Length: 365
Image (cartoon, rainbow, N blue to C red; front, side, top):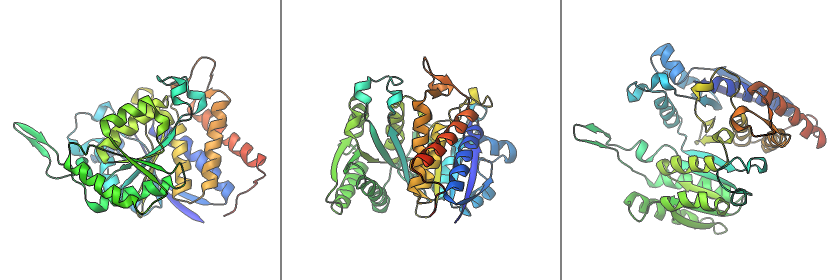
């Protein structure tokens, strides 16, 4: 089996964390007898510096020709004053829209080793393991009309039946293999578009009678994630609310550097860490690669349909953390400080250990 992947390392620490994750990816692919061909392209600020365009047509075509895309990070101080359509972040929005990546999946799992790293009490956090399904190509980020006039600025939040149905089904299908509970987050007490969202989600829920559905206003949801995160299993919400909620969920885990994500459409897929480009530590080989490595695990699960490979990668990362190894951003007293490259090597070692313990040898499809 052959698989083609486009690498978009991007800006800041992006090239470093992508490089580390690709090592793990290729090692896992070899174990599974899978061939992964990679081609690298520029995006974001790096692309602007080269082409005066944060996402060229050529790069986009390369993504179209691939089975999936692995992205590092975009953005940085150098490009903050560019016009909106030339900023690195505009490339990411265009990429998501062009590839039809309507479902953003962000797990929020708290490792026991990081219970003391969060600002929340350990007894509140322990056992937290939920996933946010964020609608990614609709809503206020893409609605028309939008603009700035002399005395006002405006955006439009619009959702169609199809846009809500497809993200809702993704969430319910995931819940069927987890805790069988979906929380839909909206603002239906104020916004007509949210009332419409709620109506559609309730109709879709009838097709999944074994899944419990409950609704929550977004302001209350933000509070509840901090107050009692264990109550959530699968969360589904709109683009704007999902942007906010998933970052709150990320922060309670102790570090955004821990969190992977997948953005899926009907044909294409994009995998990326939740964290930003961290230009202040770029080029120093001390960025945390965990989120990108776990994004590769999600790639094995969703794009290659190789759940076992994903599980082994996740287990390997967990074992490295349990052994006390840390990059500087997550290091605490007593931790064994390692750099980006060394952390990836430790994951490779643990990957092999897991395989040997389970007598898996070389995986076959």
